[in-house]
Image (tube, rainbow, N blue to C red; front, side, top):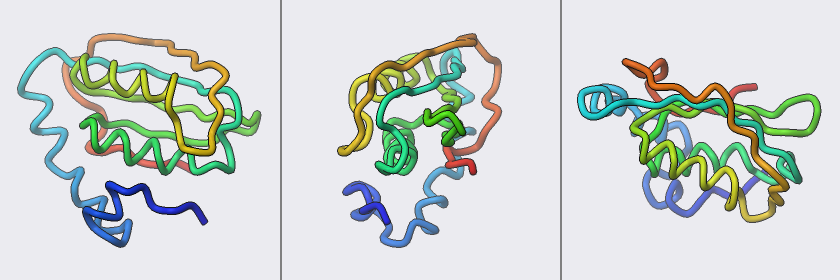
Length: 127
């Protein structure tokens, strides 16, 4: 089992309570500035190293919505949505930081576009 990221442990304890923090995020973000959406795929040592859990935690800290999941080819894929500067912060994390035990070789971004409203209410791990 992966250790809980520090911010998550400090905020809520059990991960089920963390999900409550994302509620209302979509409403708060949709009223301000233009929104962006981008798909991503991360290559390297990104499975079996808590990458998805850390990505979920980082997305919530930054304030973006979307999802993340493992693929059958050993990569991690997903989508991020939110204000452009917050999406850019998450893109940087996905390209350069990752989880403590991960090794990011490269991250491909595609389908980047401006959207009129968010399609998700939080950031979640998909299976």
